[in-house]
Length: 162
Image (cartoon, one colour):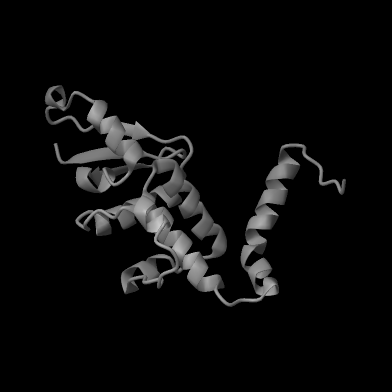
């Protein structure tokens, strides 16, 4: 078996290479717990209630491109101190999205535990915001603030100044 099916919360199904899918710790754990011997040629489907098809497609695109990359140790890098932010040209084009989409990718990658992609998105935001004024940073995050306020209003929360 070399592929697996992943289903988004809006019922869109993607057929994905197993090695690309295993870049997600969540999917890798699920597959490790399956009895792969008894599945024969049947490709299991994993449904994700918290990931939209747009975000799942982006994560699949990234993991498919990076599936043969050597593993990185994100935990050791966190303690390494300041360093240059190197982002490949392919990754720059991949992350050339609006702020709302970028944060959507981060949230979905975090949920699926694709650490390399979470780190890449964070590096991209740091590179984008480095040296910017507070006003420019507020503009960068304004779409997220609007979305948060809209979601709070839907949930019946009110904004108070206590």
